Amino acid sequence: MTKVLAIKPGSRYLGVAVLEGPELLYWKVKGIKQKRSQKKMTRARRLKRAEEIVASLIDRHQPDVLAVEQPFFASSIKSSFLNDLTGRIEALRRKRKLKVRSYLPIQTRRFLCGNGRVTKMEVERIIATERYPWLFRYYQKDLWKHWWEEKYYYRMFDAVALALYCRHKLGGRTGSRSLAA
Image 1 (tube, rainbow, N blue to C red):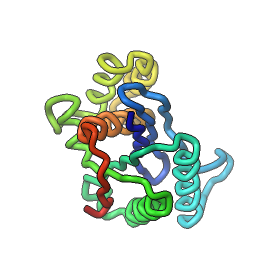
Image 2: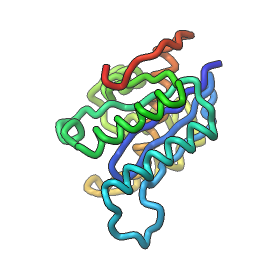
Image 3: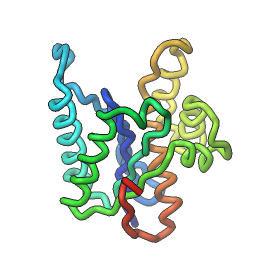
């Protein structure tokens, strides 16, 4: 069975999921900052820390495929941090000789929900109620927040959705595709 490590990159957090076949082996939101006491990390240090997190996940889980969410919204596409982080993930992939797939969030949402324009909370709900019920407590924590408060676990759910979509798209194939493609 193909093992997929899915990463939803962000400037402060990484959503992470590992899927082997239909089994969800690992799910987490990884903070790029090491300690709460660190008020300001330099951009270079945040990039280095994110790269270290991804490298340790690759070493720990030994995936066959690395799935990375492509920046989609204008602010994400223009983010030099996200572009640099994506470049570092691509370099890690080449160094470790991993196959990579990159997908837009709209593709994963369309696959899970039948509609690419659903909310992040709808994606969370479907994963937590229809796919992996043990994740319901994380969904509930985000659900209890007010609409103006930042949701925390959506990153993890996006990574789970990405892993599910990647597994679906592979359908037994394991060819390589560049992040830039």
